[in-house]
Image 1 (tube, one colour):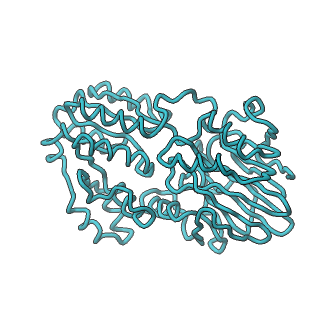
Image 2 (spheres, helix red, strand yellow):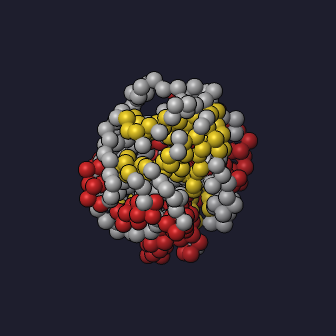
Image 3 (tube, helix red, strand yellow):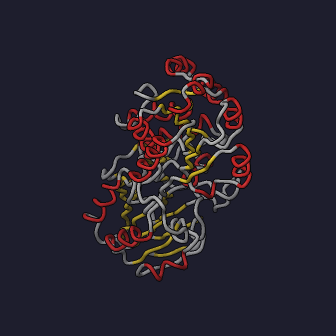
Length: 403
């Protein structure tokens, strides 16, 4: 079987891997690079028999709009729901895609290849990794994964009962070169959020991705422990609503201690997408800035570095001294925003754990699968792999490798 990494051998984001036999072409992920806008793919013109999408982060699926709508695109139910949500609220649309839902450990056939998905722990909800078998070879694509989230049991299960006889492991390494984490797992993140809420005197803001369901759950559990009110926006309420069909354990807009803040842009997006009636449903839990101001010392408000945030701060008298729990990768934290917070007397405290595997977990993963060759992807530190792992083959973008 022939392996080609069209993009991702020397960067994080924009992942695109091609597996090819004499009869079948398969793409795994078709991501939008993080560092540039691409109107047309920079990859060779490819007409695959199918596409596999590991999870719902834009750097793994963002170029699906360039895939012919007749080509089947395999993904989890959770990834499908989140991609459809992003189509409503973001300018990067996938358009019509021929989605096929797959389930963990349920093999399916594409041409002369057999694909077995495995669910993994990652900051993207319902993320998958894939075992692809063809022409007597077994290739394992890790996607993005970790061992310290709320589904860490999946990582332990993989270590205890890994697929055998792996000829090639294509494995991510996002955390290489990023240093140690202050918070080792979601439990520590939840505990620190709860402690901040116990100590606060003003409103508390949470900067986190609405699609990071683990983090939303951590924040909600911290609110329940401290009898705080978790204020989410319409976008977040809609995400949680859509994921009900995947898991009944995901917090919902009408659960205890959750209220919904309406933003005009979000309301227009939902109305344009045909969800006008849903706005009346969410309205039952609506909260405005006046009510937030009255009970601000009980509020944890989900927020972002956008045009609404300064308006909210201005309207909430006494926001000076309030704490921002920054629960995202700090690379997103701009100097401009830090300067704004300093002027307004807002205190930024990073409380975050990565969505990706730490070095020790990468090593444990590679050791468990014991591949005949390991190929780095989704990393800026590919040259470090030979020192950390065995049987490493470093490719360049577009280089073909015969397994």
